[in-house]
Amino acid sequence: MRATCTQCLRPQKTCICDLGVCVFSAVKIVVLQHPNEVAHPKGSVPLLSICVDQVSTYVGELFDVEQLGLVLSDCVLLYPPDPDSKEAGAYVDISRSNTQHDASIKLKTFVVIDSTWRKSRKILYLNPWLADLPRIGVSGKTRAYHIRKAEVDGQLSTFESVVYALGDSEAISHAEQHQLIDAFKLFNRRIAAFTPSYL
Image (cartoon, rainbow, N blue to C red; front, top):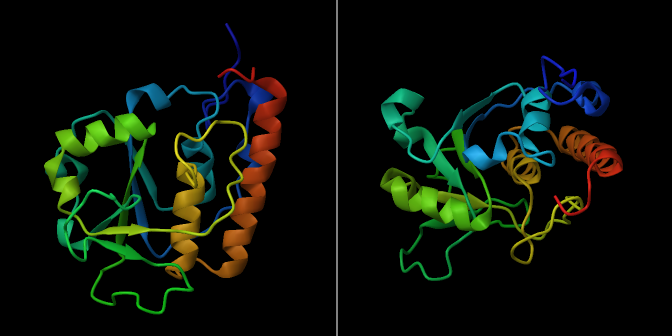
């Protein structure tokens, strides 16, 4: 049996604990993780959890708001806009370049789905309360997640999406955002050195 790190839960030879940069976020992050992502060798949530202090991860497909301890009025869903949605104002771009940012959107808790694009849609369908949340997103960012194929153009990893959203909403500093992305690039290189390319 392979020796496993007790903190990041990865095999010790690919332990990522030394990449943790310990950033304090003014916004809580709640990760709803599909079961298939838990042991995925290229998953980015373990790194997020050791780098940012306010991260809570829940595994499943069906989630109960009360069990998660969420106050929905304080939550926003970090999720790309749905081009088929007819809901006016359902999506807000919080990038620093967007001066039309809706100040009425409360940025207290980011809810993010960690899964493939297809499975994230299933989680949205199974949890109607998620679709009712105001959505925020990031745009115009350079993807650094080269160890895993994107399913759609411009798709970022969970780590990148959260870090850019935290930076753009000023929940962390610009310098901290860069520090986290640098750690993510090191993570990519380390995992690429040990993981077959087909995974």
